[in-house]
Image (cartoon, rainbow, N blue to C red; front, side, top):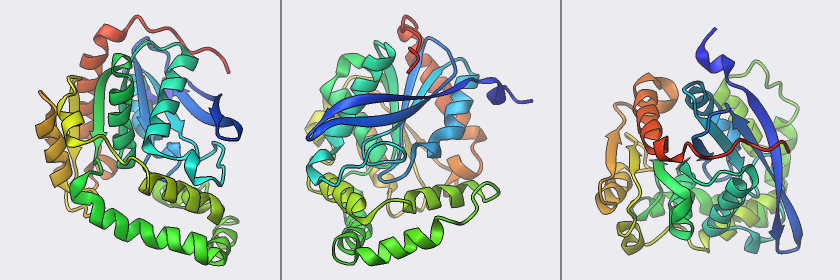
Length: 290
């Protein structure tokens, strides 16, 4: 049995103040170490996308939290665009740290989740011991991201029946024996059109990421993972932010989707970085039961 199989897992929930009352957020806590890590998923993708990484880090003595931000996965999904923004997601990360009693944590994410991690470092720098940025979405990616998300927004708003039909077709499909990427895709599609439109509209028309000047002012240890041959997460954005943050380390993937398909090398890089960042944070307290 691998070490990752020995790491404990516990699903929890927190409630945050929303525009129309309290909103429920769901997360999973892995491991029981005193050094904390928070991982954030890409836009619209459920938190389980980071299950394997979380288990790997937990097996190395780290206490890992994987959050479904509002509008994602099993968290609440209000149909109000003003409920969603990168800044709001970052505030939810701070609320999660408060909930579990973690003074500081390494905060990481993939795609827009990396943007959220950057925003956490902006609004609460005293809570961040390190940043793990996997394929951040910055200036070089905006065109491709708009080309991807604009049709999604238009379909959800003006032809919701198409997304509803797709949801009805995919929902009964068996998932237990399907490959991981198929299960993630099916879970991502399992959302109502109004909810999808609200999330995409809120994020696209809100603050998408800290500015270049703000990023250059950060002093937190940072590891940036640059993807290969990914037009939606061009390596230019990873190179950009790695050059802006003093002392940031840039790690290039050797092949497309290397961290998903052949994760061993990047797992080692990420684990070493997180453990080094987390050393001063080992005073953090353990998770309270939800």
